[in-house]
Image (cartoon, rainbow, N blue to C red; front, top):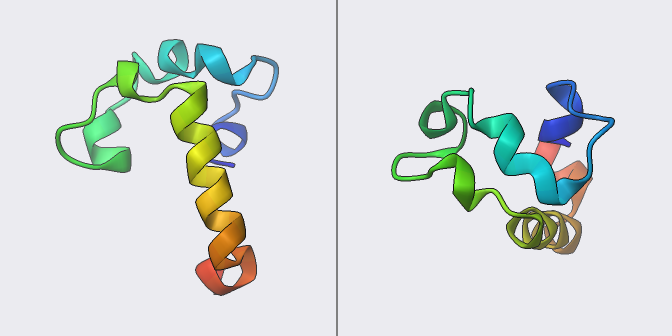
Length: 60
């Protein structure tokens, strides 16, 4: 969802690190994170966690 919100809609998830390479990733996602940490596996796990918790509950 973050990637779509930032306009990265035409690329596959495994290329997310390329998108975040020019972004202030520590400000967006937390201290100590690098662009190379945003893999398709990590993004998939994040989406799984959001689904388990409940998207409506998270965003309200």
